Length: 356
Image (cartoon, rainbow, N blue to C red; front, top):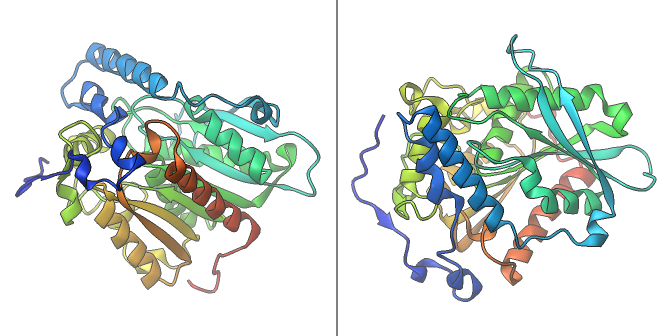
C-alpha cells in the first residue's frame, strides 16, 4: 500500500522546536536519513548489506560522544547468553541476549528490565550500553537486551518471537540470575517500544502480565489516519516517508495497513475490550513526530479500558530530539523521567488484576 497524503506538514524548520538547546539541535543527523538505503522495497541483498553497513557506521558515529563513565562501567558486569527459539516458531533460531548484572549483594530478588533497542533493520543492543548500564546501576536491576532478527530479511512476527523467547528465558533462569519473575518491566524506544506492546499482547494470551511497560514514541499504527501522520522531514528525520518505508520492510508490502493484522503486530489495531487486563503503561510522546496522534489514541484506549496509564507529550520535540546530538538540560530531564517511570513500576505494583 502507498499512502496518499493530501499534503505534507513540513517540520524541517527549527521554528517548530522548543527554543534553546532543542532548536539548536533540531537538524542534527539522525539514523532515519539512512532508512531508504536498507528498507526500500526491491533492493537486492547486496544493496541491503551495503546500506546496513553505512547505517551502522553512522549510528556508531552519532553515539561516539556517549562514553561510559568509569564508575558506571565498574558498577556492573556484562554477560552473554543464548535463548532457545520461540515456542510459536518451530524452526526459530536461538536469540543472543546482552545482559547487564549489577555488582554487590541484593536485598532479595532483583527486578528485571527487558530493553528493546530501536531501528530493527540494523544495529545491536551494545549501541545502548550507557543507557542499559545506567538503568542497571540506578535501579539495581538485571537488564536483558535481546538481539532480535533484522528486517527486511525477516518479517514480523520473527522479531516478536525473539522477544517472546527472551522473556521465557528470563522466567526459566530467574533463580540463576536472582531476578523476581513477577517484576519484569518491558522498555523500548520507537520500534523497540512498539514490539514491547506487541509482546504484552502476546503474553496476555499465555496468562502472563509483566510488571509494566516504559515506552518512548512507539509507532503503534500503520493506518496513517491522524493529522500527525503527514509530518515530514523529507528523509532528514523520522517523518511520514521514513515511517511508511519501515512498515513495508517490517511487515511486508502486502500486509501494510490491513486491519486484520493482530495487535501483537500492530498494537493500535486492538479494541478497548482487548486491553482489559493489560499491564500498566508509561509513554513519552513527541509533538512533531508522525506517531503522535496514534500514540495519544492508544493511550486513550488504555484509559477507556481502565488500565493504569500515564503519558507525557513533550512540546517542541521530534522523534529523534533526545536520541541525537549532545547532552543538554532538557535531554537529561527526559532520561531522568523515563528512569523514574521504570522505578515506579518496579517499586509499586500498578497492575489491576480485577480489571478483566
